[in-house]
Image 1 (tube, helix red, strand yellow):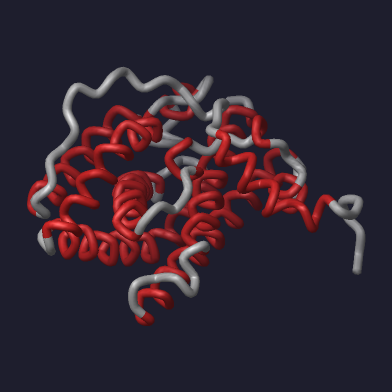
Image 2 (cartoon, one colour):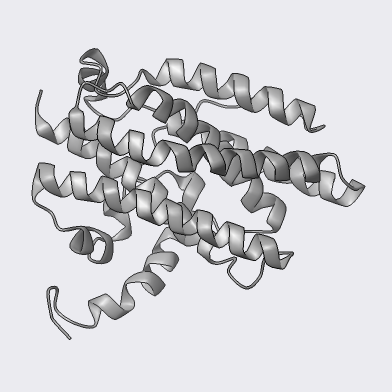
Length: 249
C-alpha cells in the first residue's frame, strides 16, 4: 500500500483537529462563565495537541516538518472539512459543532485503536481518553441548551440546521482511501457514519432538537474551502511568514 494514501488521510485528520482547535481557542476570555472559559480552552488545547501527533506521523511518512505544513501552506492546500473552518458563531453554534465532531472522533477512535498500522493505533490509543471527556462535556451542554430556555433551544436548532450537512462531509472518502479500509488501517466510513448518526440522533432528540430533513448529497469538499479559512490562515501564519522558514530567533 503506497504511503501517500495513508499520508493524505493522516493530513486530513490533523487538519480537522488543528483548525477546530484554533476556532475553539477564540472563545478564550469570552465563554459564558469562568469555569467554561477554562474548560473549553483546555479542549481547544487538546485538539491542537492531537493535531500535533498526527502531523508528526505525517512527517514520518513524507518528511514534511509540521511547522512548514501548518504555517506555509495556502488555504487550497489544506485538507480539513468546511465544518471546522466556519467562524465560531455564538455559544450554541460552537457547542453543536464540537458535539458533532466529538461523536465522529469517538466512533472513529474506537476503531482506530485496532488499526493494523502500529503508529495509527498508538496515537489513537493515546488521545482516545481525552476525546471521551470532550464528548461527555459537549453532550451535557447540548442537552442543557436544547432543553433550556426558548432562546437557547432556538439557537441550538438554528446551529444544528446549519451544521448538519457540513458534518456529513466527515464521511466522504478520500482518493484511494478504500485501500486503507481494505487493509484495516482505517475504518469503513459507511460504518462510521451509521454509528455517528445513531449516537447523534439519539442524543439530539433527547435534547429536544429535530434532525434536519431533505439533506442534499454531500460533495467531497476537502479540497474546497470557504473564504473563512483564508482569513483564519492570514492571522495564523503572518508571523511565521514574516521570516524565512527555519529561521532561529
